[in-house]
Amino acid sequence: MSPSFFGVTMGNLLDRMEPLLAAMPAVKSPEGHVHFKNKMLWTVAILLLYFFLTNIPVFGLDPSSQDAFLYFRALLAGESGSIVHLGIGPIVTASIVLQLLRGADLIKIDTSEARGQVMYMGLQKLLIFVMIILEAAPNLFGGFMRPDPEIAQALFGGNMFAVSFLIFLQICLGGVLVFLMDEVVTKWGLGSGVGLFIVAGISQSLINGFLNWEAVSDPYPVGFFPRLFAIGLSGGNYLQYFGTDMLAFLTTIGIFLIVVYVESTRIEIPLAHARVRGARARFPVKLIYASVLPMILVRVLQANVQMFGMFLSNIGITILGTFDGQTPASGLMYFLAPVNGPQDWMWWVESYGITHAPWEVLLRLGIDTTVMIIGGAIFALFWVKTAGLDSSHVARQIQMSGMQIPGYRRNTQVLERYLDRYIPRVTVIGGVMVGLLSVFANLFGVIGAVSGTGLLLTVSITYRLYEQVASEQIMEMYPFMRQFFGRE
Image 1 (cartoon, rainbow, N blue to C red):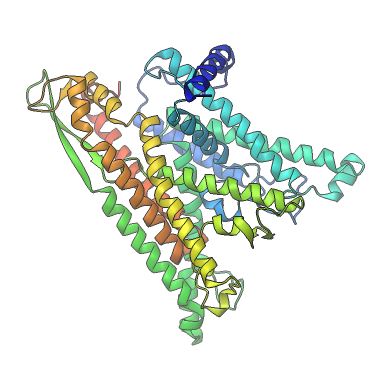
Image 2 (cartoon, one colour):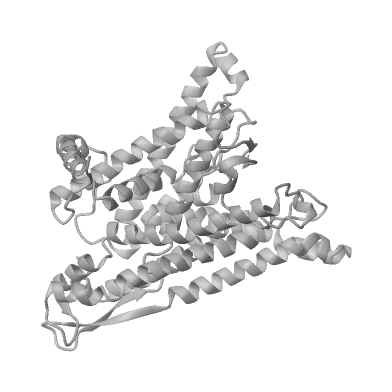
């Protein structure tokens, strides 16, 4: 069967599902311009609500439960064992599925029309709800989130399934709440909820990594600065107790500086208004044009693969590999697992206890690097297309704003051909660069036990949020500029 056949079949199915897609729950969009102060209030309110939900534990959960997403927790922006256990996982997974379907031309929805926009958004929400169920179910029936026998005995006469179903409902409710909060931020606030939750969770871990004064595995605090002073005051051996911490500190500072520099590197295309003499602007094509959000797609895809392998291992099917707790120990799952720090690849350091042969460690490292580089480039292209940042969409936006490139005819096709010189190439280069930066950061670890990819995302998202805040303030000062740039 040809792809066109599947495309026609999918199109017919979507037409039949149109009433359902149009009825998907949604946060009401603002009817006019939302003032900057109101956007800030909505963003802060959702952020406080997010932190509140991360501190609500799932009722009926046994303390010995496993976290299937332990090594991806920083990226999923959820708190293990809380009502928002799934975090942004279902939202990102649904986005992956939708982008792959559109990339394969199996879904043909014209989002330039109102009907197409409604169907596309409805389909995306339907996929999110499906993914919430699919990601919550293995956590229960795969042996990850175990019901508490005492609660089962006290409330349901020892019926463990009843407690499991209650846990399932709580996790699904949390997934829906995260989805709705993301919509509120996207429509009424600044940036996106996905980015906001990632920054919030990782920033909290970074502060904890720098300032935590509690001792865990040795007599000294785990926080970087308290540990630094405690070792110095006690006359301890810095090399013994502080070697990996200093490496993580240098990596953290290095990633911060590199991302800020790369984010400020751009090609600026000059624009002039066709009717207002002297009105000029520039359209920036950043080196990381697709932002670092495609890295979330790559890592969440890896997280789902690992969860599937762990699910099979827990029910006794070890054809894809075995797990030691939440850590892949052998088989295909070991080689497909991402490298999260020096403890995963420095086999010559005895304290890390790596039992795999050097060739196995290097093969795992090579696979992770290849996945991040190729996946970063592919998902960057998909993201640009889906987010309306490709040459055709940008050309239409420039045309509608009344702007044009000086020296060129005011024509959409001319604009598109001009933008094609830069946007596709820069998108691929940026995706590859972000993949390499992510691998580099993961190799040496960062402060706060967050992944290198998480730190990369946090710095980039924060930088872009700062740019958006500055842009919003300019728009408030000069309202006529909103018409030029399609903000109103």
